[in-house]
Amino acid sequence: MEAEAKLRRLEAIVDRAGIAERIEALLPVGVRPRRLSARTLLMGMLSVACEGRPAHLSRVHEALLCLPEAEQRRLGVIAEWKDGPHLLTYRQVERTFSLVAGALAKAEPDGEPCEALSEVLDALLEASVELCGEPETSSYAVDWTDLETFSVPPPKGGERCADPEAAWGHRRGNSPGERDEAFYGYYLQVVTAVGEERGLAVAELVRRIQIGSCEVDPPAALLELGPLHRGAGEDETAAHDAKAAELARHKLGAVSGYDQDGYRRVSCPAARGKLRCPLRPASMALEHTRPEVISPPEHPPTCCEQQTIMVPPEVNAKTAQKHDYPSPEHRRSYARRSAAERAYATVKDPASNDISKGWCRLTGLAPIALFVASVFVARNLRVADAFAARTAEEERRAAVGLPPRRHKRRRKSTAELIGAASAPP
Image (cartoon, rainbow, N blue to C red; front, top):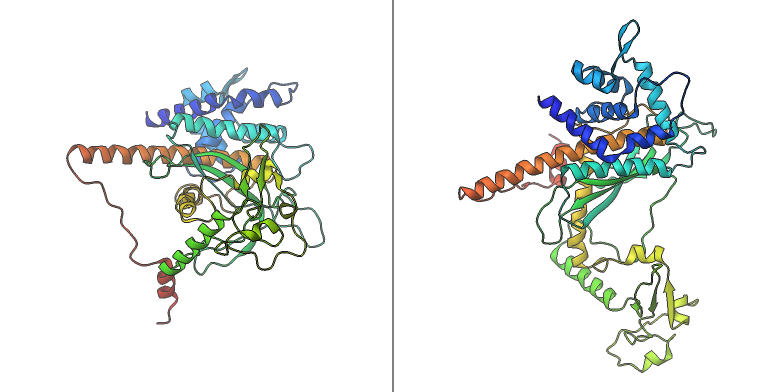
């Protein structure tokens, strides 16, 4: 009965997303009717992901054959032919999947998903969030990770490989003792729900994913003042916060709101009387207690030559934040970004789903993206169930007068553990 309940939940996600009908409309119609429907194929892919199996079509075929006989007949896994019942074959699974992947791929691949594929991924994940329960938050954490392809990288001679949509990327090793390295594959980005600032905890469900070739670079940093480094002391933190506050006071000042197209006008801080600058003669009459630009640029930017400048929406989208970067308020709010890291950790866990190299032996953006979306749907279900169980346990302890369960803190840092392990005997 538990297996049937899990199957019903997966069916509810597929039907709520409404993607099976849209995919079927994109598939070619042959002389003979196709045996396996897109809906049943998606059910098999989700079942494989929920069981923590690798993303192999043979596993999808096996998962469909493991269903109860009544469910197999209902989903079309067992069909009645003239000579009696006929069981679904692997070649039929492979055929339907190749048609689906081909319909959702671009005619001329460029390393980015087409609109139809993006709509399918969004609808599938949104349906899982709706089924698990809408998180009571408007805050989200966004981050990217590496997604290696199973294909061998192309040789240096420039010849094509099995996955021409993939490209060489670079991943950073942020943990102590971990080195930066190159990989061949895709960049995977997720949008994960997080709790509001000083708000209650919510189920950290992944709402959107984006998969693209590593040839598409992430946006570069806009400000010179970098974030506070890990392990900074109190003095370093105080000095950094003072610089952040100074930066916030003397940034470009807004002189208008955002228009309907996302544009906004800003002006130079010297023109607004915030500091003294030789390029703005009127500002030199300000008190000497104001900061002064000692070495103005030889070739001043546009903001130094005009009273105001128009900032386009692509820049405003990166700078329009609740807190100034990298102020202490921004740092505390930015710490919630670890929810995205936890999302990656749950899909790179050998104990459940592990999307490391070899997990999916298919190549191409569309086939990999479909299986990755299935994994995040399964991950959302697990996270929602665990969050509901924790919430119920906390309510039970509060009802009987017990204190909340305390989280155990690590007594030693990761660097100390690595140093102890690598120390000579």
